[in-house]
Amino acid sequence: MNLYIFRHASTYFSKNDISYGDQIENAEILPEGIPAAKKLAEYLKNIPTDANFSSPFRRCLQTVEIVKEITGKNFVIDERLKDYDFLKENVDEMVSRVKDFNNFLAGTNYGSVAICTHGYPINALINLTIKGNVVPSDLENYPDTGILVVIKDKKVEYLNFN
Image (cartoon, rainbow, N blue to C red):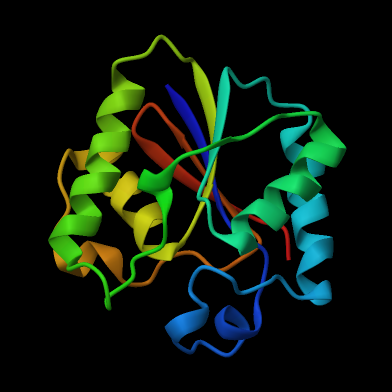
């Protein structure tokens, strides 16, 4: 299965590398993040996907709306793709729900899937797909906004649309 995983467009919090705090679910994308999301969508427009999924958090919903306008792709909201909220769960719980999502994908016949989510879930998905497990240190240094992570045949490529 080919995966096309991208982080939501830039927000005040991602731009300044600060915690979302109580805005974790409701933070909005910045106007300056929209061009990268549009460029990423233009690329995805030429990629046939069997399914597309998104985190339910506002910044992802806003991002996939931009992608949908350009590509025509509809995204299914999946709670398992939520951002890691250290106030409500521990790292193991977050990894467990992302693993559950990854196992769901593995049980399908999808050939190609697009996913919009957040930093920690992106790194969890990469590591689950490539090596089958995740350790806490795997979650750090996740891709910036505007980066598309392409996984084909257990090989990872990062495409920068910033």
